[in-house]
Amino acid sequence: MTCSPATRLSLSAAVLLLLASPALAANGPIEVTASTLNVRTRAWGSIIGQASRGQRFMSGAEQSGWVAIDFGGRQAYVSAQYVREVRAEAVEVTASALNVRSGPSTRNGKIGLVRRGQRYVVLAEQGGWARIQLDGRAGWVSLGYLRKLGGLTGGVLRTPGSSAPPASTPRPTPVTPTPITPAPSPVGGGLSGAYQGLTYLGAQIPRAGLYNSILRRPEPYGTTVQHQGMSFVRGKVSHFGGPNDRGVTATETGAITLENLRALNNPLNPSADRLRRQPESYYYVAMRWDYRPVSKASWRNLRILVTNPSNGRSIVVRPVDWGPHTRTRRIVDLSPQCLVDLGMTTDQEALVAFAKPGAPLGPVR
Image (cartoon, rainbow, N blue to C red; front, top):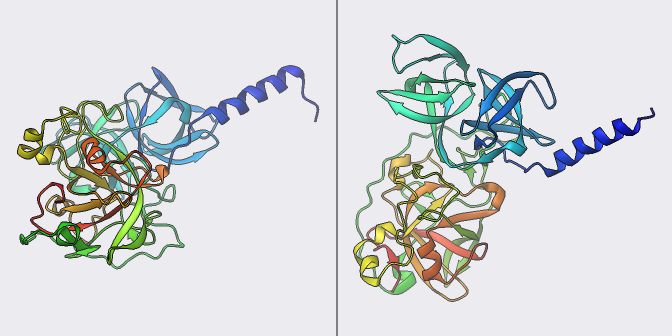
């Protein structure tokens, strides 16, 4: 087939557009960045609606610069060039069909229908109802027919249109989450005195090959290594939270503790006295925790030990959020203060394990 110069130019422009589009991992929260964004039946398909700047959806499979979203109760596609990943609470529909209403009550009128396996970003909660972005409109659905996925920043994979894990991954036997109330233990003696292990009361430090019910597949990163006769998970780090973290909005909260993320680690250069008085504001962590063996709320009671193997510095931190994005190939996000105290920068490798219950937050002495 022979193409005219105009046709070849059009095709070239389309290819360049696709190559310029950012890659998005499947099933992470995204936010529209364009003032108006066409929503289509498929990549380059018919327009079925429009989304506006600031509206949030859960992304699905990406195809050549187009990303799938659940839109108006059906799967649709938007250009990946005009959305960005965000950190947000998300839910999955567990009912075969669920009414979306104009307000948080059965007395409010129906504006749409969503179905089992579809996932939406939570915009607000009120009286047992969650507000979601249905299409161009936002509506309310009953929390009784939703499964909370936690605060995510992309990277949660699923088979498009299915709520089940990929067929090649065996589904684990369901386990009732166990509440954790750790008994304080005496802490002392440096790293070995603070160390607990990789498993504690059913909870496990995420690491490669360990099935994660939130990812719906085995965790891809984190190598188990020995350090000073103790087992740790080794992997890359980065930082999050604090007044300069523009990767989250001014109102976004951590999935574990629901604290405002920008309000943490503030000010960025605290005095030694402030660190002693408010260690919880400066020593915190995000990992891709699994909420199946133990409940999400239980993670906030645990303590995590992080070590820089290059200089031997160690700190004890508390879980605050779920992350980082799997696309980063990192295993843990730390507060800016943690990186300062550890003498680390983004993408250096740290060692992670549970700290003993009762271990004080901050540098290990």
